[in-house]
Image (cartoon, rainbow, N blue to C red; front, side, top):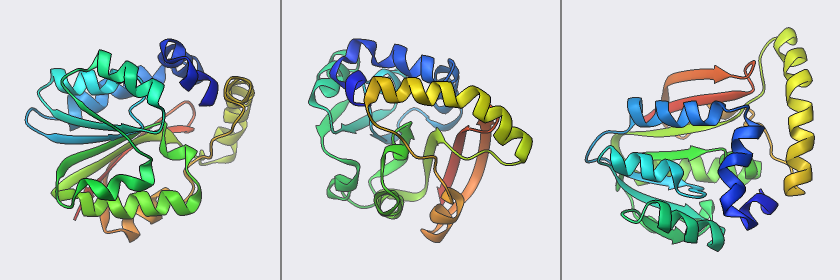
Length: 206
């Protein structure tokens, strides 16, 4: 999200447009259903810190990482109680094994290559405590021809807008279930939005 990342004040508004407002609903569900007081949470791709602030308010301890220094500067203002680190998703192994109760990623894993995604999922398993959960909200390919058709009608204009804003494209998380299960996770929850193009997926460290 290059252009939006250079203007953090517009980032959250831009993400609402690109998801037709669903991302706010997803974030509220993440906080209310999957994050508890006392949890140690790692947020991969924390952006402006809006979700970090919500998780802090519910009593969690949050570490956020992002590749954009400007986004991190805004995140530190929005959630001063959290710890924010300038690093890429593929560097999270430096944070230590068996450290986190939750690892959360919203609209960030779809920016990774297939190899990077596989690596981040596998290292997330290492970073999580026993029984910890990987909580991901991101683009996924819809199932069924009619959902794919409706998705095209809705998502193509949004994808074009996203490209104009960012000069880059994201990739739906293909074969995501297989990747997390191969890493040792067990999927315990899934909810889809926008005709199956956006999903909230929760996977538990078995």
